[in-house]
Image 1: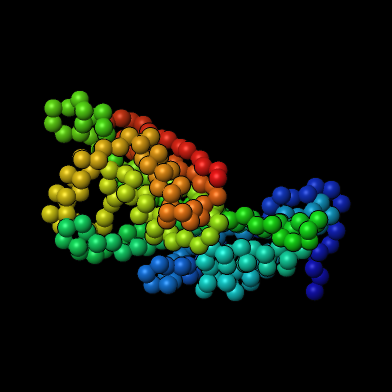
Image 2: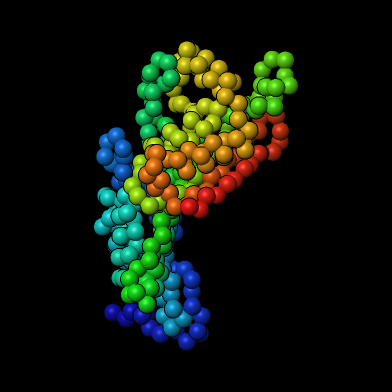
Amino acid sequence: MIDLQSTPDTREIPLEKVGVRKLKYPVSVLDKKNGTQMTTASVDLYVNLPHDYKGTHMSRFIDIFHRHYRNLGMRQFLVMLSEIRESLSAERAFGSMKFPFFMEKSAPVSREKSIMCYTCTYEGDVAFDSVTKKNTEDFRLKIEVPVTTVCPCSKAISEYGAHNQRGIVTVTLSNKSLFWIEDVIEAIESSASSGLYSLLKRNDEKYVTEHAYDNPRFVEDVVREVYIALKNFKGSEKPFSWFKVECENFESIHNHNAYACAEYNG
C-alpha cells in the first residue's frame, strides 16, 4: 500500500509539533501505599517534523503508548517518549499525561476514611543530542491540591469570625530522585490553613474549622510555606532541582481571585 506520510514535502516548512491530543486511556501510576493505582489519563503526544517530511505515522503514538500504559511511573514515561522518538526518526518527542490521583485520607478526629482526588500531570521531553549521540531528557510533574485558607486580615479586624475560602495550590516539580506524590500533597496541605476531606463527622468539622481559624494564611503565606517545605523536602535529600509554587484563592467576599507564585532553581 502507498505510504503517503513517508513521501517528501517540498514546501520547506518544518513543524514543531505533530501528534495526537486528548487520548483517553487507563493507566497505572505509582502509589506509595499500594504500589500502583489504576486511573484514567488524557494524553498528548508529539514529535517534531523536519521540513522535508510530509507527515508522521500517527498510529505509532498509540501503539507505543499501549505497550506502556500498565506501568507509567515518572521514569517510565520518559522511556515511552524515547521509544516514540526513535520509532518516528524524530529529533524530539514530548508530551503530557493528565490524570486524577486518588488518596485515602482519615478524618482528623473520627478517623473515618474516605477518598480524595487530586489532579496530576506528567510533562516530558526527550531530544537527541547530535554531539553526544545520546538523548537529553526533561521531566516535570504538576500536582494540583485544593486547600482551605482563613484570611489573617479579616481575623485581625473583625470582632468575631473571619472569612475563608477554598484555594488551589499548584506545584510543578523537576526531580533529581524518586519521591512520592502523596508526600508532596501532605506538605502542601500542611502549609495551608487546612487540607480538605471528602468525609467529615461533626467533631471533625469542628476541629477543621477551629484549626483553620488558628492558622490563618494569605495567599502569599501559602506559597512561601510550600516553597520552604519543598526546598527542605525529606531533610537533606532535596530531590527537586527546580520547582514552581502557585496558589489561587477563590475569594469568598470579593468578585475576583487572589494569586501568588514563586520559583526555585537549585
